Length: 79
Image 1: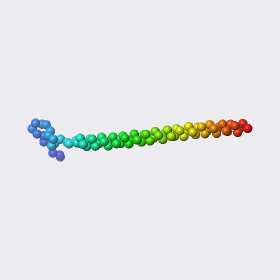
Image 2: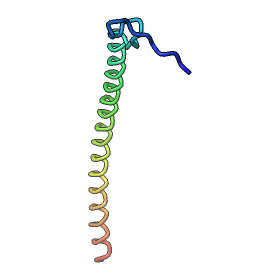
Image 3: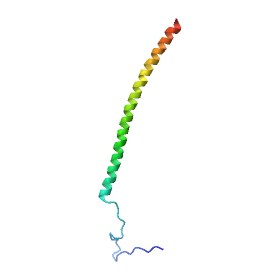
Image 4: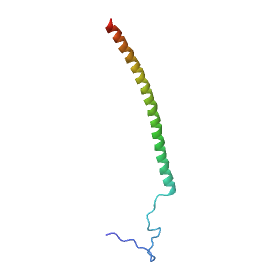
């Protein structure tokens, strides 16, 4: 069985028996890592947006080619 923590007579915990949390430097480092990850995601989203615009451009060119081939097909089938 675990031994209970003895509190001083005042009943208030002292720093020696309270759990220590992370320091301010640890918290700042953690937030910096989160910020770096978010920045990396934004960079990836920008690259994806550029690729999406390129695909849309290619899609437009393919539609033009398809329309041109369709008109050629109509002309040749009419002869």
